[in-house]
Structures are given as structure tokens and as C-alpha cells.
Image (cartoon, rainbow, N blue to C red; front, side):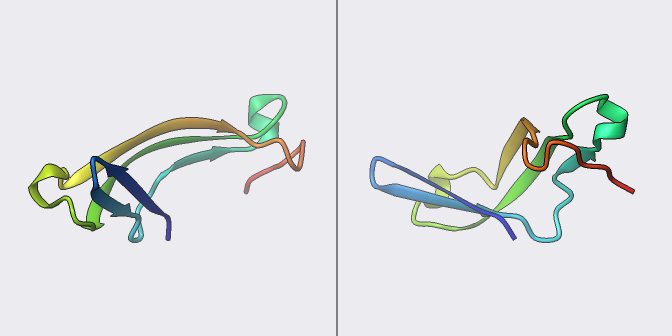
Length: 75
């Protein structure tokens, strides 16, 4: 489980993964170099004090390069 917490102007919004498919891990064999993970997920709000000021979901979009280990394959 991943939990992301935002606090602004004293209001907190908490979003969590709950068996959420967060994206794709691509191994070094397919990238020709360092492995990467591309994230594209909608995380449901699971708590916080923000109430109606928090959206029901938060969109998480990102791309990460995996540097350790330098070579990583995925089956």
C-alpha cells in the first residue's frame, strides 16, 4: 500500500492505493538500458480533514528511472 498525504492551509487530504494497478515496469532488456516504471493511476481519497475540499481521487502520473540495480529484467 502507498499512502500520499497533502496538507495545505491546515487541511489534509489522504489518498491510498488499495490493490491499485499503478503502472508499468519495463525491464532493461526492453529499454536497452536502465529499467523504468511509468505510473498512471487514480488514487481514491481514504481520509484527511479536508472534507469537500479534497477531491474523491488524485491522479498520479510519473515516470521513474530505476538506478539500482543498473540492469533489471522483468518476467
